Image (cartoon, rainbow, N blue to C red; front, side, top):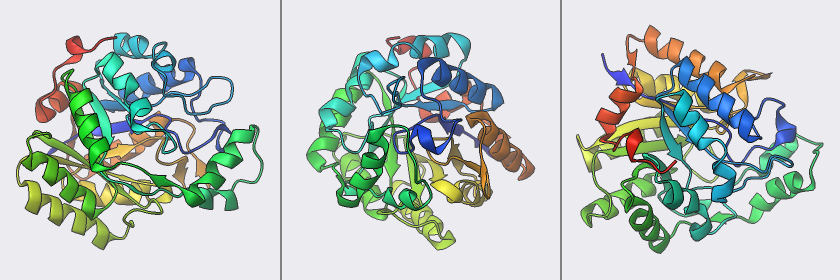
Length: 307
């Protein structure tokens, strides 16, 4: 059976501190959460930063600097930095941590889309910080811009430091966008295709949607890609389980879902990693180590980063 890479997305930019007391916010919390996720079996940790006082997404390199070297020193996990940042940010702001720190992997979004998380206002009514309600409400009129110009800029600027990419594909068109950049030589295999399911504005989380993504990626990229999946919210474990039966890699973490089960908040990122690890192993697969993930994805290694 196959080696499955578990990625853990530690904190993200959509959820707010008022939604869960377990969401990592401070550099210390992000450090501890990433290390615990790696110890639980995550070969890759995907990282955002937040203002330690308000929890607001913060894409300044200075916000990442306190935790990156500490995570690197404490674990061999591959560090993957966001270039998504917040969908309210411009591409120049979003890629700054990657061009500054030159991680082994960075996310890159493969197309513009409606990016809607305002339905969370139906579940969460009270907030500690003014920005939180505005953040959710603002997504009613939000187009997350990832134009061809933006994507090309991101690929060139971030790739110059030897960083490879987690290509985040929220819909079928994003796979075709990736194929376009591959044809131009701006994206190079092996591609880590991260298929995202269940976010309003992108593809759904029905099993047929998962299969359609897989069939299309197979047709476009053949053996030149590694397929990973994430399901948003309550779709996290069902989608990951379905894809794992097909040998896919999986991504979990509090960026993607605050939950560990129906009506139960996850108390840590590590809890979600342990849950999906148990499922993957029960299916007969084994968990990839960081070294195995580096080999599968042709990464430059931890010695090549700038932190």
